[in-house]
Length: 529
Image 1 (tube, rainbow, N blue to C red):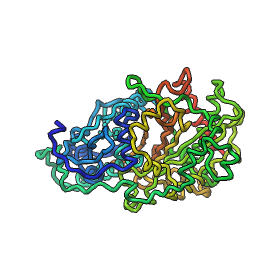
Image 2 (cartoon, one colour):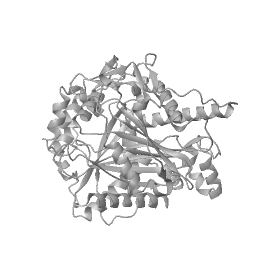
Image 3 (tube, one colour):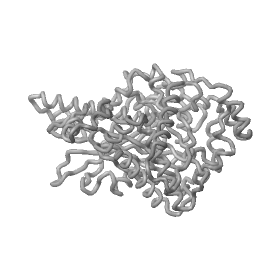
Image 4 (cartoon, rainbow, N blue to C red):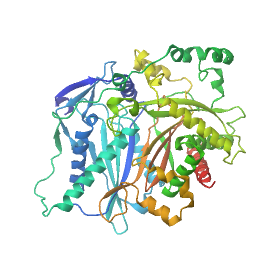
């Protein structure tokens, strides 16, 4: 029983962590899920379960939050505690194998699988950390299992999206270490089964919360903007330098229906698009040529897609805008979190931007499109380079998070959509985005693709072929979430998630499929310039 496990206090939850704990406890938000498709080209001396147990134990020693659970989750004094030991079996679930040909990323069965992971959050229990690794073996023709999806499902209280990337970095590292040991060992010893219990007494302490590790400065101008911007006319707000993102002009933005929550019907809707590795490389190249970042053009793709899909449903007019939010990774600004880019922790803030809808007939990617993408890229880079006036700094002014969140229900949503781009698990070499590659022969470009670090074409060893990132339905979040992650060999996967029945549209599934189709066509068209 969890309550029989002795625990040790680690530290109080930080403001952002506490917010995530309360949101989880209220049922407003389920699991973050970051999955990777692992491919194995050789043989192992251990059973698959032993391989996974060993790799998980290694990850637990490297990422302190994986051994932390929550104390007093329903209170305003939440804290992280650590049980004296962990039963790794409690955090590993191995499913029956599925046929690769019937279970690709675009198949409905895979989408249903991802929704199930998001919508099955573990209840906070003081002795058990709130995360699980779900293994879905994938069988090739003939029944051979040489690959598997490993999906880490975890509470946002313990880490952000980048934390899932950090986990898979470590998990892959240990799988490769095990394989190297197996290749160099002259004997096979199956007489010593892997123990599933790990002592936590020698594990390192938790990294500090972002509020403790960094000075999040809030200026009076920024603090008062939400309050005054709601009442002051635009010209007065402009004179005073107060943001108008909260004033009456915000009424022009499409934001679906107000915040709502029904515990009996709080479900995630999901669809996705994929871009193959060649298209991704072409897209990165054209972005560099145009002076924009990938996230910048992704915003333009989403605005374009929403404009078309909403126009088709009579929900758009000439003055409609979209309020977009983008999570910002602040690890580079926090020394305690920047010891490695693979820190498993919450170190994220956000940036909001109001973007005009695209005219329904504006289906071509123009220089104006790229100018808007550059503008967004510049703005996001600027906001990610400072700890001043970050939205998470405002959490220090809240005294009762639970009451505040409950009172949000019924209010108009703050944002139309969110784009969260985790990037590439092993970053692409910068020369792949070099315009000079446009003159390279296709064969040379393929060799470049195959020689990407960590993904060399070999007959043995572990690699990550694809990745997927999913956020669950959020009762007090944006109407839509676009969750992006990529790999060097598998290209890009973008999932689109939303809280079912809140979009205010008769056919939400059809709307999401249409949006995905428009986004994909837009990005492919961008590569054809």
